[in-house]
Image (cartoon, rainbow, N blue to C red):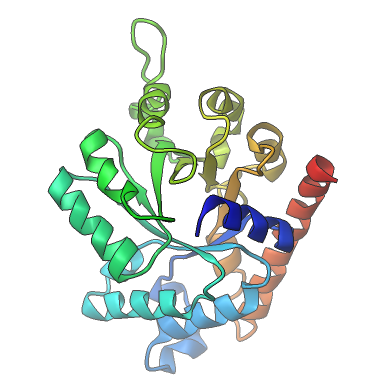
Length: 272
């Protein structure tokens, strides 16, 4: 999916919601455990209940890798089940020497058909460029994350008081374009978005942390939205685990609907 197609999808749906698909067996509704593949059934029902309210899905590959061979099969089947007109993100956080990254890119962007993959820039340009060689595919680079330990490195300043995450943005933005690169910026770091937009004014941002982690959608939109929207807001736990009862999918839809309706308000304010 290219940038204009993504923007059109967002405008048509009045939504820039990305639903995370990070299933943990012990957190699934108990009645699903009798299914042949409880995780796949769970994912399918979540997708059925939310696909008209979101523009993207983001499976975190760790939750599937942890299940071994069956987990990889479940990930494949989940991606295949997602409607073709929605954006798919492999939250894999890969990034290695060039020939290894080339294989990761082939695995997720070619063989599994994801539209995008999250990548770690620590090893530099040659670890990221293999992900940028696919037409209408995206590398989503970790920039400023919302986890507690992010301050260990990401905000370290050099002698010119430039923070490390700012160096990552300034350097990596030239590796690709706003047509094939996005950045991960945590919603709990919304106060930094204004500064981030000075460095990358037109790139899309994938923003986790709204809802369960305490991030404010209003603040993210205030400081991060662009004339081309420029945002994908991810919600995982707040939607997936809205209920452990048999109505879990309906409750997931209610939570997704709340976010979508709030997003429409901010879109209307910005674009009329």
